[in-house]
Image (tube, rainbow, N blue to C red; front, side, top):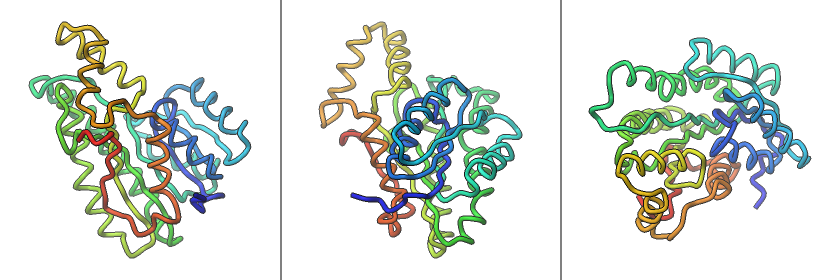
Length: 259
């Protein structure tokens, strides 16, 4: 299916690896010009080289830190210089450290709230007037299946990503008549470096082997396997498509039926 977004301009946050990198590649495959962001210049440059070698949508990158007080202005300037404007905003952030609710000390909670919630909302608000004025836009925010069924030992993630649920639905309702959509996409267990890290943490916490943790995890997934980055990215790209113009305010699960 042609998503009819060739020539559109997209910003994909936290796209040096994992889900963000996958979404950037999927959008570029549709002919979208993409701007990647993150804190690893080497990885971002390599991702851009790979995208540009395919010869469809073009890719560029900018170094940025979601926790930086100047994050929004840095991104705005980069979008203006490298894309000339914006049509698609993909809000994606790295996950917080694992732990229980008792591990949610005030300082840690505030730090991650800033990077995972405040920065996402502030950046969206910064680009929203232009999206509304042009009468077309797609806002896709990556959250987690933990907003539906809290994930053990991920108290911070479960709490902070849940804040985006109420925000997204409120936003989508407010802007539904403008031609701009806003949707959440919820990854379950997708095979990324992040999953490897979390499985390792759980193995240490439970005194089990990594293989035992992985086997037990897959046993809870009706599909019987982990998802791929490409599968997740394709679902996200569809939410950015012309055909998805009547889909807004939703939460789409990509979890193999697990949540």
